[in-house]
Image 1: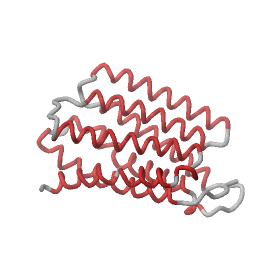
Image 2: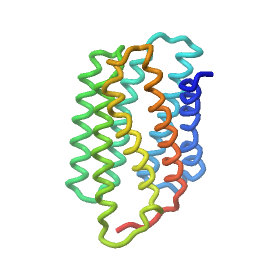
Image 3: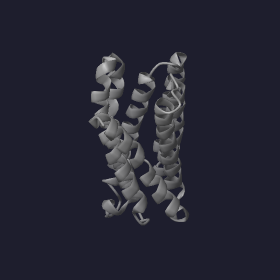
Image 4: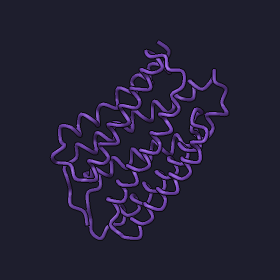
Length: 211
């Protein structure tokens, strides 16, 4: 099996790890972590469904599903960061940025059967901004906290890592020759595996008090 295909398979399988952890600790999760867990479940189902559509069901075009997934991702991450932020102005910022991102994705949906490069790039940019804001607030607390024991620290790290590494890939993918795209998509597979590990670590962390 070619390396790129193997990594795609491993990347999809890795998506089940945060889902299983979330199911096991579901009663211990707060509202924010439950929203994150819902995203992990949907992301895994979409990845697995797209893989089956391409390899088993021979569906010729799955781009509408990808367009829809981007919108769902914006909504769930917008809700997640809305719940994370303590300050009203940051909550409002999360709402405004998410609404703007949705408007852009709806505009991009005019090309429903083509790769949603604009939409995914917008999602990545949104997540980079929201995750950096959270890191800034987390690293400047009113009193000392063990950030490595904060579940959201690891989840946010996964969000920032995946989005920042892949944003240029998403932006430029449609300009890369089709025959060469699988070589570049190795980047996506590797970062997705690492992100899913970080998500799982975050869900395994015991709730900690923050101030």
